[in-house]
Length: 319
Ligand SMILES: Nc1ncnc2c1ncn2[C@@H]1O[C@H](COP(=O)(O)OP(=O)(O)O)[C@@H](O)[C@H]1O
Ligand code: SF4
Ligand SMILES: [Mg+2]
Image 1: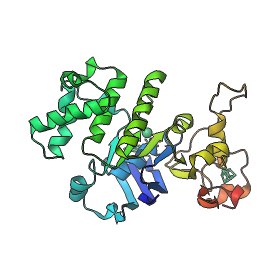
Image 2: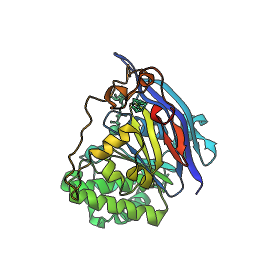
Image 3: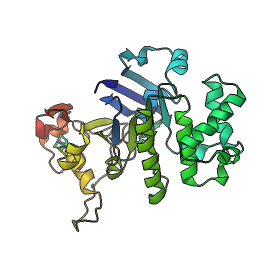
Image 4: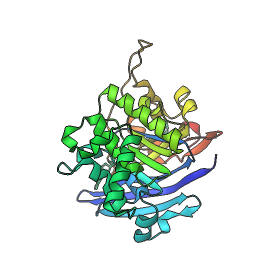
């Protein structure tokens, strides 16, 4: 499979009163055509920042925005904002934003909200866009009359389907899904996961699936990137990572997943995630790592290939 998207050394820093927040600090990965890459890590590790950096929907307080984002051989970081909006955002890469289902416009009928991107970016007239909106609602398993409802008349699962329909409106190749089910009950969550699987298969989509839940990621992921403190700590094929996590942080994350089959004591990770204004020197995980060595406090380990297609940033593997 060829790489559809290559991200290299991506950085996104915010300016704040406390100082510079290094939310995404040199992140690199590949997304192959038709695959799901899961980005997993605790809240605050920079997952959403990485997503908005890729789709270039940025807040004002940006300090640094740097790196390469190569889509089908073209570095889209080098494209100016106007062309990016015209040619890339929503058409080639789209996104389901974290919490978007609760940000639907309460006074606008759902059908019109799905039609809006088609009018704005797809240059359709209103009638045509509303017709296409009904088709899109059908695609995500909603009956056409939903188009005439207001968001408050819909359940959480239905609202999330609407938001997914909006992301698919301009027929993108890549969809970034930022915690798409975390606000939903487990049954609804399972239904949405099934919908995402079905859409991926039918439309040949590639997903970047962002979640804090490693167990949930296992349902969709072909490849997993474990993120900690603005960096990728481990990256590789999902099956191998779940069977044999290499990085101490991945091991801890896996050990904290409850299972029905064993009565193994659940672990939790002591301490708190790093402050990204002044992250710990050396390995950012060292204050919480049971294996921390002197070198870990001083020198930062680089993400290196430890086995074929398995990358780990840890001094236990030679740094
Ligand atoms: N607009 C912003 N301005 C300043 N800091 C921000 C902004 N957005 C996010 N952050 C900070 O960046 C870090 C990463 O946040 P985020 O990308 O939302 O992580 P995640 O999605 O993994 O929870 C956090 O410390 C968060 O407080
Ligand atoms: S580099 Fe050191 S502190 Fe960091 S995860 Fe590896 S052993 Fe732990
Ligand atoms: Mg987030």
